[in-house]
Image 1 (cartoon, rainbow, N blue to C red):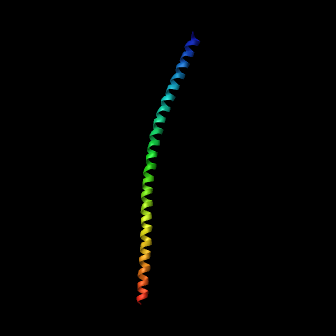
Image 2: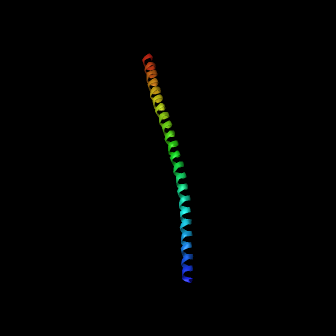
Image 3: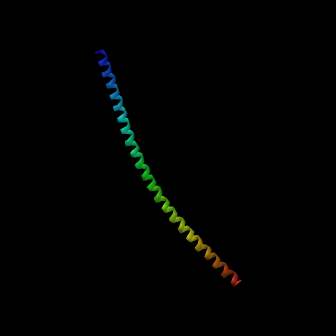
Length: 82
């Protein structure tokens, strides 16, 4: 009888430990999903920012080329009238 009681207590302890581990795993999974969702949103935000920066860069490059051409044109006019 003593051995059966001891086995029952060990069995209950094992079940309790497994339940604690299961609950911890469940909390960790929820936290991992929360972090994943936040990281995905961060990636989307960064992609949108990058797209905006790339568009601004392209516009700046177009303006730069336009201004370079205007300077060349003005230099030609200045040199041809001198």
